[in-house]
Image (cartoon, rainbow, N blue to C red; front, top):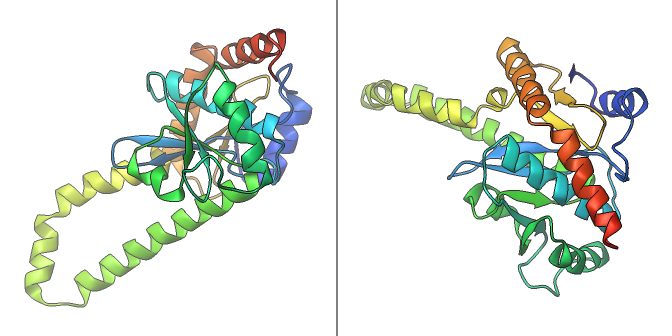
Length: 240
């Protein structure tokens, strides 16, 4: 587990642990709250570009993570794109779509758009690290802006609004807990030979505790082994 520079964490994991056999590039899987539960976004920054085959490997790893750690049965996997139609997207997306469609280890539901991540219509969203990191940072910025606007509205209006906010405090506390990134601890780097969690540099005790918990769950449920088995099976059957 590491809290600090993402680049340094990825490099240390690659050189210190090594990749799972058959994995071309590890992916950072970030758990994002949605209105029904959570969606796993990957890659969210391990590598800025990716080949179609590497995106398929990310889909396999993200699907296994969603099933074992988030408890989602047969997770729905979507390819992040600018439209739902199969013919939409850049060359990368157009080349990746048929590979995901043919992949037996994932429940591929087709292209999804950015709004689907928070809508709960998909469980795993696949993209390259450049797009994924932009999506993640945009969501973080929007969440902070909404919180700031909410506080400003409450504290700079009348007594009635302040009393209403006070009455809503228990409900708001539940909402904040649900969207608090510290509840997930950090983002696992999937594809290396041991559970590895990347935490935010400003992580406090709560986030570190939950990162340790996730690492323990990944170990207990043999996530590295499950990923390795899926990749080897694909190679033996003429897939990746």
